[in-house]
Image (tube, rainbow, N blue to C red; front, side):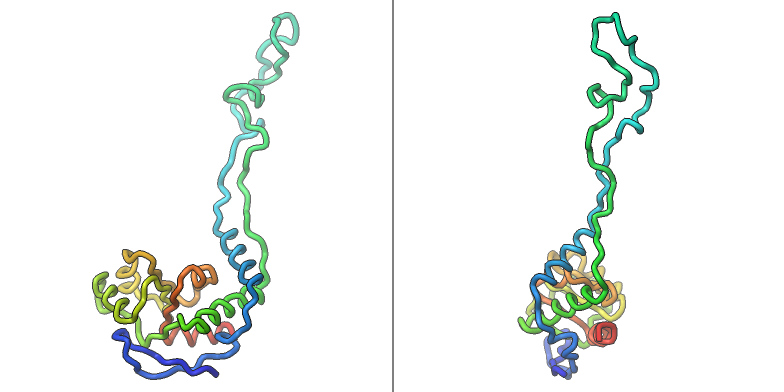
Length: 206
């Protein structure tokens, strides 16, 4: 077990917590982290770019003019890609960019990301992150006392006041433990968690 200090929102030591070595002290493999980030970005990619092929263009059922005798080139349909308003050749179509990543690999990558933040001393555990009211100024004061700049804040449950207070603070983000992903961890230099989130993650990942 790893013993870590728990702080209050005023940056005062209020106790300690034991972190599981199976979750917060895992050897890091950069290639696996890279694969997990690629998988996440591919899964959230929309893939909605699309053009119409010949079968989806309106009209074109009638031959524009007779085959011979007009002096013009042969034409069989107004839906031809050669015509203005016709189909698009080899254009993009809707597709799913996501690719399968084994559950064990995803969990291991998440453990590696958490271990990286702890090893870099950029993981801070707070006793309680709830706020009595929606106040961005109050959150900025708390952030300053804790010495944070652009943190990712992970909570054990949803705190509406906290989320609404953080949404206008550039670079800061709040997520619950069950929606935490490796991309969010690696895209923020600082990781802040409350005790409930730590216990929930250790129970889920151990």
